[in-house]
Image (cartoon, rainbow, N blue to C red):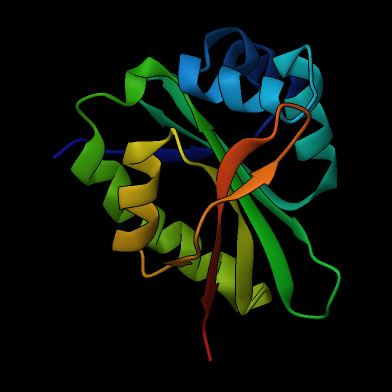
Length: 153
């Protein structure tokens, strides 16, 4: 199994991720009204209470964080990844269970939206124990997104 390391985030990592995000991630970013993935990621990073990147063999392939919600104990997790995630599915799935556990130490309720075009991400969220609601139209293009949520009581 591949070893995945958690690494700190700087602007170089944000730039690398913005330049290399998967096409489905780029489409989601655009549907939410951002022209530049770097600006979208920088905003997400700046709003995050927890922020990390994941790397394998010295190459960053995922950037994730969680920002404060409107209510106490509510957090909004987010994740972007590059094509380098291929072949790391099981290893990243196990890594993400730890990541979600850490987030829920601070935010017992994790909630957000996922683009319906992210079929692999939807499967991953379900595997992690998130509930997904029926799709709703969001963003400047009115694309469909599932609201997802998971409470750790």
